[in-house]
Amino acid sequence: MNSKKTEKSIIGQINDMSHKLVLILVVPICLSLVLMLFYAGKYSRAISRMNTIASLKNIVALQIPETAWNIVSGRDSIEESRIYHSIENVEKVIDEVRNATGEENRLSLIVANRTMKTLEKYVNQIRNNINNEVPVAENEAVLVEIREVANLVDSMLNEYVAKEIASTGRMSLTLKAVIMVTAIIETFIVIMALYIRKQSMKKTSIFVKKPIDNLEKVAKALAEGTLDARIKETEVTELRNLTFQVNTMADRLETMMKKSIEDERNLRKAELRTLQAQINPHFLYNTLDAIVWKAEAEDKTEVIALTSALSDFFRISLSSGADWIPLSQEKKHIEGYLKIQQTRYRDIMRYEIDIPDEIGHFYILKLLLQPLVENALYHGIKIKRGGGVIKVTVRLEDNYLLFEVKDSGIGMTPMQIYNLQDRMRKGQPFLSEKSGGFGLVNVNLRIRLYYNQTQGLDISSDGGGTTVGFKVPCRTREEVMEYEGISS
Image: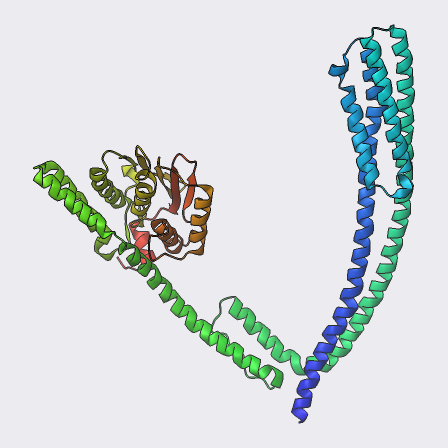
């Protein structure tokens, strides 16, 4: 019974302390922040309004009268001077500022806007006088009126700015008072919170502090990767179960981490085997049919070429179980594949392969290009009227190999690209090709897994074809063997 009371007392004390500190500290601070943000916002908006009105003063007091003088003197026409545009712009800005201003300071802007209407009437009078070819002296008299009206508008704007300055000053005083009161209250709150915390900690720290420190140290060690860290048994009943659970979690985490490393390697190999199993049997049947057809036609050269290409295709696909092959072999693999497909689709497909021989010694994960080429053929070239070209390019840049498979097929819509990229982001291979993009999704997954990259395939399309590219770091045979854990 005493143990249960002690347990309850400790938990209740910690909860009471937490609730009091939250209420004492958070609520007043939130209220003060709201008040300060409110006044700071009003202050900022007032400054912005004053700056806006100040920017009009030069237009009203100088620019418009000067423009009117140029019109009267014949230097500019009404249309060239754009005086109406200036007046309209001033009226629009005044209206916007007036709508954002409080009732107490609107009168000056209302008068200013009405005076701008008078100014516009005088400009209309000058325009009519010019059209009616009246003497220049009459327009000069109107010009004097324009200057006086412009000065009147300027004085109204000055009056508005003066009122806003006064309002802002009062607001500033209020904000200072709020800040002072808030600072005093929060100082008192902090002192009171420190006192409450001190009293509460005295009651709990001696009994709870040491096991919690041990728990924190072990948790930190686990977070930093020291998976063999464990917590010693504690006499604190409240923490005994937690200690047991943390140690159990650490045991499981250590076991799972070891298993995860092995599972990840097996997963990568399984993904490769899955992709290799996706070779369409129809491709083999059609290729053999083409060989038979060429043989019946007694085209010995083509029979040899097709048979050699098919042999290279499957030999490199298997590669004696190796996951990594030289780039030169990958090039030969797609050359064999495209050679076979060109026999079938001679009228609609052409291809170009630009892979320099000097980078052929670098090793890459095998079967990265063939699925991209196949996708370009079946989803780009084959269904386009008139066919097109598939171009495969690889270049070396900053110790990276940059791959690009480009076709001149029907292209992809933005929605199709988005859906495909979404499927690739999820990183889940598909079990069928019914939805399209099966090869791309698998290649993207394998690049990310095997090369430990966040970025896999990059896909773009402009309606005149599709480009699929990716880049991977250069790896030599020795680096691949070290990565795979194979001794030379």
